[in-house]
Amino acid sequence: LKLLCPDIAFSKSLPQHPLFNKMVKVGDQLPSVEVDLGFPPTKVNVAERVAGKKVIMIGLPAAFSPTCSNLQVPSFIAKQDELKAKGVEEVLVISVNDSCVMKAWCKDQGAEDSMVTFLADTQTELTKALDLVFDAPPILEIFGHSRCKRFAMVIEDGKIKAMNVAGGDIPDEATFAEAMLEEL
Image (cartoon, rainbow, N blue to C red; front, side, top):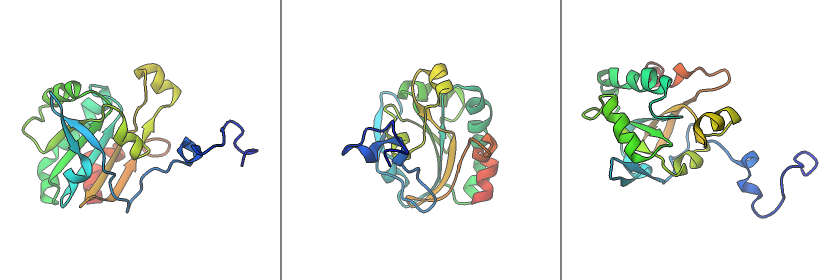
């Protein structure tokens, strides 16, 4: 193994190396991690929030960025009636930003009285637990630190039932409401 991965310092921390991390997948339980809601922030445990419900969780690289603000989030706001008709109770928007930014973004998107809830993954804890950290050099150059990969997942009673992660051959549109409606 050391010959295949010479850059890895082999020690007790080996399982924590990114090479050995494992992205969540369909069938997995959502991890029990706290994120922030509103400002001043209130801690929300995502596993508890989704227990007993059908929800869609979307992860975004950055609040107020063009694709997130002009396409992905608005797709879920526009499709609320269709989502509700398919049994979705809430859409959770996750981004690595502080809760003040997420509250302002919610207001900017006109989502304050909608089924779309904006949650701040301020310390990247949920993003890391899902193994959906977006830390490619261009992202670090633009945003200054790790972000969340663009994803969307259907969650029923805490279990991931469908999941799309943008990148490679998977277009951003696979994480928009229209694509997720097909997964329901």
